[in-house]
Length: 174
Length: 127
Image 1: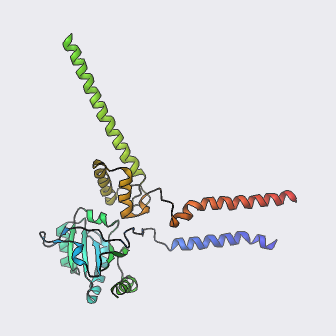
Image 2: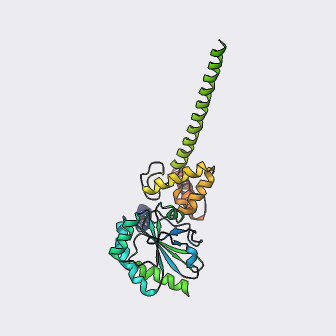
Image 3: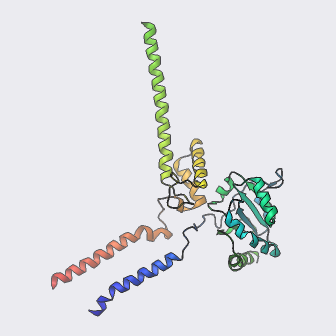
C-alpha cells in the first residue's frame, strides 16, 4: 500500500529529469545536414579587390575555417577578438561577409583589425543559403579534402575555441 | 448584324483568355502558399516561412518562387531546402531512427495507459 503511494513521486521525478535535459538544450542550434559532406562550391569576389575571385578549391590540402559574419551583426563584434588568438596556430580563416554593405564591411575590418586569410563578399546571401546559414555568426571547420567537419552556431568564445575547435583541428591534422 | 456577332465572339474570347490566365495565376499562388505554410522559418522558429518577417525568410521565399518559375516540383524544392537547413525546416518530419520517439511516443503512452487501465478495472471488478 505504501509503495503504491510513491507512484506519483516516481512519475514526477521522471518528468523532472526530462525537463532538466530539455532546459540544457539550445533550441536555436539546428543540426546542420551539411556535416561530413563536401563544402558547397562557390565563386565570390574579394571584399577589397572586386576583380579577384575566391573559390573553396584554393584551400584543398589545408584545414581551414569559414566564418560567416556581417557588420550589422553585434555578436560578430563580440567574437572578433577571438580570431586573432587563432592566428598563432596558423589556421587560415576565410571570412564570408554575409548580406552586408561593402563599405561598412571594409570599415569594420579597418576599425577592428583583419584576422582573415581572405575575405569574400556575399551581398545577396545566396552562398550563405548554400551553406544553410540562418543566423550570423556561424563558423565551419573544413578539412583537407574540402569536407565540412564541424559547425559552430553563434559567437565563438575563448572557451569554445580552446575546448572544441582547437582539439578538433588537431585531430583533423593528425 | 454580322459585325455585332464578330464583336461578341471577340469579347467572349477575351473574357475566356483573361479568365484562364487568372485561374492559372491563382493555382500558382495557392501552390506557393501551401508550400510556405508547411515550412518553418529557421530564424523565427515559431513562424512558418509564409508569415515570417525575418530577412532569411524573405530570401527563401524569393528562392522558392524562382524555383517554381524554373518548373521544379514541390518535392525538388523540399529536397533543396532540407539539404541545407535539415528536416527542421519541414513541418512533416520523416520517420527515421532519430524521430522514432516523436512518431511512436504517443502510441506507446496510449498503449501503456490502456494496459494500466485494463488491469486496474479488472482488479477493481474482482474486489
